[in-house]
Length: 432
Image (cartoon, rainbow, N blue to C red):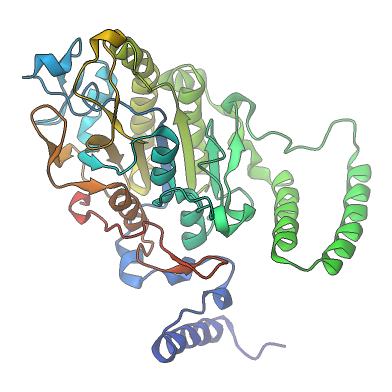
């Protein structure tokens, strides 16, 4: 029998943690539970308004000049793109985003992003992990860090879900498979293989689980290493998920047609709707990817086509979250690996090439100020002129919005130190 009540146990844990920090200079996080949620500084946790993240990744390199950073006085740069006014003072967008213009009062557009990586694979990797690619290590993705540091909200649903996303960008890295995203291919089909097959009775299913349990225990006893233990945890979590009454969160058929029409058609649009359902049901981090932004050739037709799906889905997501009272605790991020060149390549049917030196990302909700631009590029959109924000700074800002310690060091299995945003610092001016 434990002589400590719950209050005494919490006090004892804090004492052990504080004593270790004071006398040894270390945190005893493994002794404080399965996640590091209790590690966040008290001040940061109180200031945080965001509980969830919806991370919309524009794969291929979204052209900032044609979307969030138009240059109306530079016709040679703008080409076929026109700048339009929005419902926020001094905020203009490319004309391909008319519905986004209607919710601009809720957006913070960062026009001073800068990356060191100008190739797709490397650019997407650093955006998702804060680190350069290395052949000797696989870094955890941002969603994995958020779940590792903040813990899961719902005890049965995954903490991290990725829709239409590459597993190369949403893996658990050296945190292990437990912290990788649960993958969703088609939003309409939901979480695959999460229900008992119809031809298998509940009695047969329970009997097979019992047999598998006995075999697993023998195997785990013979091979007691971390990978095997992680597999066992994933196995038990999968069984728990199958029996969860909240598995219906993955079912878009429960949405009325008017709501589905608000978001529009297509995988990305319905992925945004699924993301809203998941955060409503306690999923911590949801990534939705929209590809096709690599507009080396025929940039203007390519941007117009991508924006048709993005514009309605994104504006619908922001409006729907606000209507339901969820925007205040959900940080919605629009990110991409880099921008596109101000120079229009005429021999490539008016294409634009890769441009990591300056591009745009957008934040909304989760305590972020709305109706504003942050940072500035030069007259052509080629270079950051004011208030540069690195990839690592953006990821530190996301952590700050969630009340997570961006400067907390965790050690990899090879005893190397890592942080959620490497050397990045949060841009606190973005918060209300």
